[in-house]
Length: 264
Image 1 (cartoon, rainbow, N blue to C red):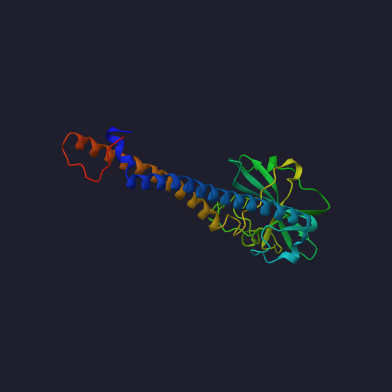
Image 2 (cartoon, rainbow, N blue to C red):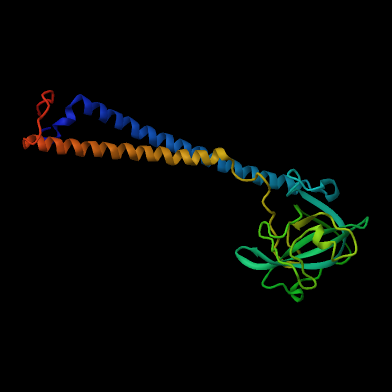
């Protein structure tokens, strides 16, 4: 090796090259490991959600045993028996990127109270003529327990003055003014939509997302790959500077260090 690249044979550059050859694979390995940790956490999270959903669906309990709704009972499977009564439409509800409305029917349970049951979702503007009739006689429903909604939160319409037969929020506070009996301060979304309607998915429960450690793993993944790129960038930058210095030395523009070995 001769010419301007003979500096690569100096002890300093031997050290730099060895460091680069070790640092790049190490950074790539660590980045890949952090990425695998993130993927493991994602898979574990999905598995836990699927297992929880399966367990809940297999172990539906009477709704009265699961009240009041809290973090532990939110989204749990419950069952109730009664007769359907008054029905309301809940407009301005989006599902699968389409605008539509919920069909909310009150299930009169023995004892006088009523359980709000979302029987399903229909697309378009709220129109009572398009809603299938509720089953007659005594029925048993099974679905996910949900907390009462607050207008203006989590996409719940906040405006008032709804037409007759409609309501903006599914809550005891809003429904108790529309019917002459007590209403449970909770509601249920059926696992399968009634009469061909689309089932309304369970609202996200608290603390159901990926934990902070998962996103830390993802952040560390990016950092390690950035480190690898930085090592390559600095190596080329040092190489370019040394080449420019060697060319200037050959032209006599700068003095070559005496300790620099003669090229081969």
